[in-house]
Length: 446
Ligand code: S3P
Image (tube, rainbow, N blue to C red):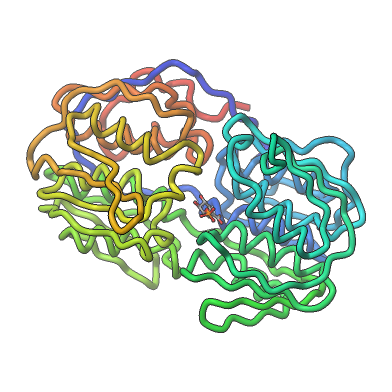
């Protein structure tokens, strides 16, 4: 965690025709890591966090809580001890590419008695922030956005006394829900967030574990203000990272791969259901979090809009699985994917069309849907040069697609894998034996 990450920006090339075998441990879950650092920073006594991912996003949250006054000490490569206490900083806080960091921190600091400026890279400055600005303003907060409509980062937050509100989320977003729950810790009265579709529940669970008074009633969560007293936190493996390897194993011959210690909680396991509905040969050991995937005969599926929040980050790699399968897969209601680290709808279409796959945006029942016509099991994608659009999940999905490519896949912007998974190229070589040409300097260096 003490290293900064620099990366080569040269394209990498991966020659096709490999399988996925052996055992792998993926980095600690990114969503849990952000929350662990924030909750520890709000805590009353030192708290240890074990299993932190080494990606840039988590590193930015660490730097943010340090800048705000928490003390973070390295214990090992992926463990820290955090001593909480927020005093604020007059310096802008740079959060790189991390949407979770900027939105959750906005809620976390809004009720403190200091001012904060939150900013990020070019991608963050394009992403919608009104979704946190508006409800925090309704709580009495002062959050000024930038851009013509004041709805973009940087965010300028003047800390002030908040009051609890009832907020119904217009879009399914764990980030917005979490921002409001964190703000609710400092608010007068209760804060209630209602969601129409279940999104990841880490914030609720971790706040309860840290002693917050919080109640969930179906899709409605209410929090009472109060101090936190977190115990040590062990971060399990990231299911969103595991998904790349599991899809790779399912769509290639002679594959048998186990990813161990994966988080399997509610709202993060949707991708497993999608893969199972495609006929994937996957065994899940829910007590250990170990997931084994073997070569499979994959058939098309339909992913309903109300299922999408439960696999939102896995759509790029699920689209690759669909492209390798038999039949037409449809992902319904993909609008939110347009405002992720890149416009992932456009990025997926470019990726798959480049690989020779028929992939189109369809309008069905007034919703944007993504239709992918699979090439059929045992068939090959054509060679492609893919622009990852500085989006880690597009870069990794493209690299895995290389496994069923007749020639090779070249990924421009592969260095974006460092956002969440700096060791991705190394792990790809470990499980597949394939070389990732050009990736030598993509790992974190101090
Ligand atoms: C996240 C929530 C999701 C997800 C993101 C991480 C989180 O975003 O796409 O990668 O940690 O809360 P939204 O809540 O905006 O859908």
